[in-house]
Image 1 (cartoon, rainbow, N blue to C red):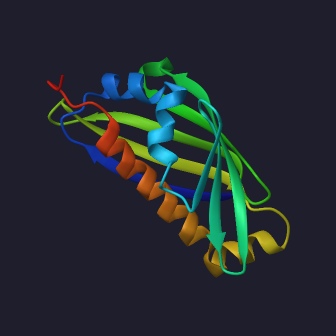
Image 2 (image 1 turned 90 degrees about the vertical axis):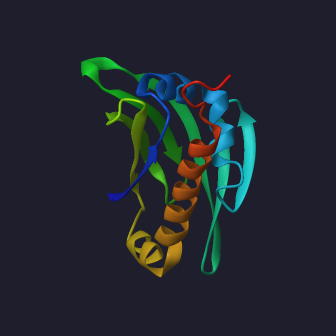
Image 3 (image 1 turned 180 degrees about the vertical axis):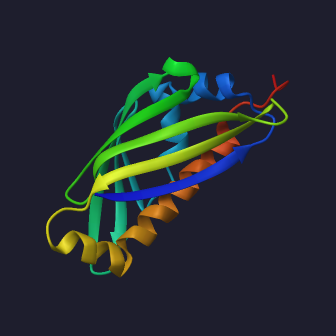
Length: 150
């Protein structure tokens, strides 16, 4: 199992408002389109993303499962699929100070597969995947409505 974690501070965005926006599957298009090397929309909240790595072009399925607001936390889950990408991605949201700020942590647990999976990660696949995930969080920073915005 491989893990990639990255985060972004959304200033002027309340946690519950960011959660409500993020749990809408169609909104994820604004996060992943342009963040990866390629993008195909299968349906709202179901995408096929291209990740280029040295010597190989790979595809990752990205399907929004929905939100979880149990236990006082806020998370949105995405199922990932593909030969090197099968797993689960989660967006975890926490209120920061001041309360109009939200920290969003993106956490991807995935199975790189077989004996060659860890080698593919070391040879550039992990860097390309991480870059796409960081860009998707930057897209979230641009897309989610700010406090007081109309």
